Image (cartoon, rainbow, N blue to C red; front, side, top):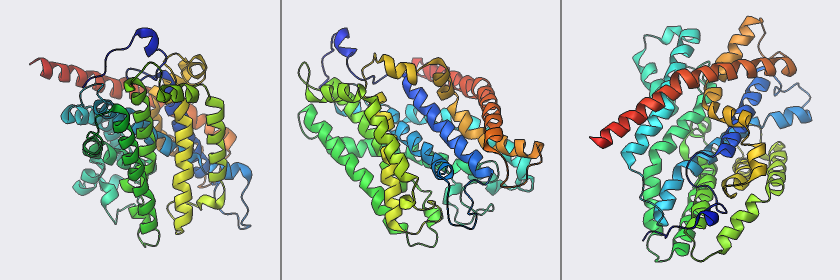
Length: 414
């Protein structure tokens, strides 16, 4: 059963569930810049133990700049699962799996393949004639190789951040099946409200898998290897998926102004409170309560705290944006302005090219490993990364997207 159309004035009071959302581009920009800042700080040695066992406040806060990763994951959960959630609640048909996967591949792979070529040419020329290395890297399956030739399960030089892209790719591939299972679980009740609740219960179980997973692998010798697999991050993707359910539930809810719509308006009108909670979660995550690093920490409790606090940052950063009415001037001014929206548009390139830029800059100035000045190195790396990302977007990503859209439209017409 499809929900009846609502008047235009009523739709303006509901969350945006389709089309372009500039404020979400701004959130994506925040995540990309956090990750870049984290990697520049790590590259100049800010997080190295100085032998005293003490850590400065600045280093502690910067050491959790990797929190941009759960923000990216939650955004993916929100934007990609939303059409399936809308289908379960009767607002539209479910997306076609083939079309969805084709769009994801066109979005993800071309610019990434260019990065693989550039990184191997710059830093791993001895592997240029190795077909297995090419196969693992080009298909984003190297995360399942227990003994990669670069040794640390993150990626070869110039691609250390790509471990998170392997997780994203696994989520993309698994999402149609995940959505089908959630939909099968939720579709049995007759009412929209009951189906929406069952979706949220299902997503709660989905998130609990992450907690069970980190506990299960915490004592394993190969925990760094297993820690790069998708089940560890269900909770972060699930946070965004839950926001997707609530946002479309507001559109499908019966009656003129039900509690879900009022909840969305309340959250959308409270970005200050949500972001204060986000900052509190971030501050707690910057302490040793989350351990040292997910790559080395063996304590299950610190891993669980990391999952929960990082997930809290992503959830409370995103919630007022995802649930706000279509017309929300404050959020649009802060996150949807031209600068933030454009940085969000090129954020994939910022993510892809940052290590290549960092290493090229360090080579140009003859920087010794683990040395540098954040106030000099970050602005230079930021400007250069934005420049390369801009070129990547306009010369590779956007032309491929347009070509794919034209090809898709042509196949549908034929």
